[in-house]
Length: 342
Image (cartoon, rainbow, N blue to C red):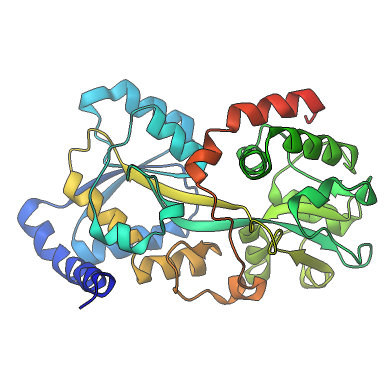
């Protein structure tokens, strides 16, 4: 039997056997999470149903939760930290609030490019950061990230502010793939192409296409996929029909992705349960729900996509080491300041 097949069988046996484990050890898990999605309730309840392990949840933004775990020190009740974006996961690692774990399941399920090299954090869902455009106004959308700075798009681009973590991570990836000089030229070109001052969230960038304020915008895929699945103010069916999209750099480095992921807290009092929870998040059941419940791409290869995500299509992701990308955040912020990206 090959290693991957045996590991997957071990995962199945682990999930089946977790109820017995919980009954004999007293199942409890203290989850610190910056994910704010109501649909995640299904993930947690299914895990409890499978294992008997009760989840006690504390929510907040990533920086607050990291600082809290640090302040709690050795007495911290935190077992698992879940958050969004590689830079925050790497920040948690640098702050010393995560620990390295050994899990054959996670190493077999989560691609190496989507997990920390020291096994302190693992990605469980992906959102590609791609181009959306007004099909009436744009017949030749940009095909790679550097092209967004082309003068052909002057006065056409809507984007989030430089303080947003998605914006910072995208520029950090450009630094990693093309160097700091090219990244600064790109940032300056995009500023020159702004249709308006940076503002709002990803959904607001899509609304800018509908209102006519801009012709090209940048957003994570799950915001658009969510609008395909459910009602989103300002993005009705007619508006969505006139929005096209491009997965950038498919003939180059690949599309940039933002991860949602987590790791085991450094002083986890329920360490075994914490590892089981992370392994559960990599299971087909949980991976499919990341897609169906929150319109994200699974991190585990081969897992089926929900209807809304499938409409966007498959793409080739950037295989760059996301840990290295996260280390470029400070340089990215310096570039933003230099080019006047608010």
